[in-house]
Amino acid sequence: MKIELLVDAVPRHSVDPVQRALLDAAIEALDRAYAPYSGFRVAAAVRLANGSVVVGTNQENASYPVGICAERVALSTANSLAPGEVVEAMAITYRPPSGAARVPLAPCGMCRQALVEQHARQQSPLELILAAEEGDVWRVADARDLLPLAFTPADLNG
Ligand code: THU
Image 1 (cartoon, rainbow, N blue to C red):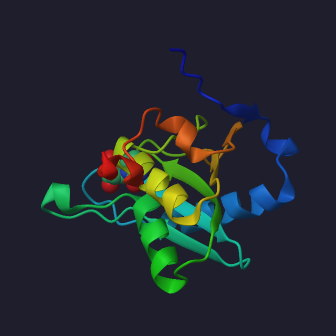
Image 2: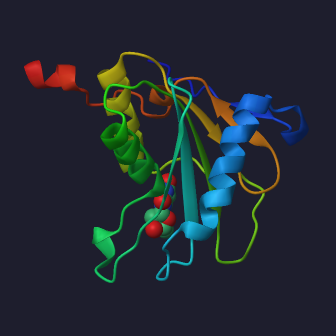
């Protein structure tokens, strides 16, 4: 079996304006991350089918495993504010302790699972726009491509 990872690398200046706006919303949210333990700030912005944009940032905790990633904060907030609304796209950005980075960040494994669940909920693809504060943008047309052989709701039926 061959598993393909479908990622397009796009120079920043040629990013589509709609994607660029979502990325800018995520970058703007970086200052609102709560990351006193890792110093690693992450922000995610989702665009819903109704046109609204919802952001999330990582929220850490002195009890480290209690912390939650930006992507799941954004998805949970969007689903709580607008249940049933399709999440069309998510932009993810970050700022490491060393300052602005150039290489895009892909979501952690737990967030990939949450993105797969979102696809199952809405039955339509969720596009990812991955970028640091500078440098190239990586585009993934369907977040499920980042989690091959995923465990999905259908698996619960055996
Ligand atoms: N983090 C995210 O928010 N999203 C990711 O995709 C990777 C990791 C957060 C979790 C923790 O607060 C910090 O980054 C360092 O792992």
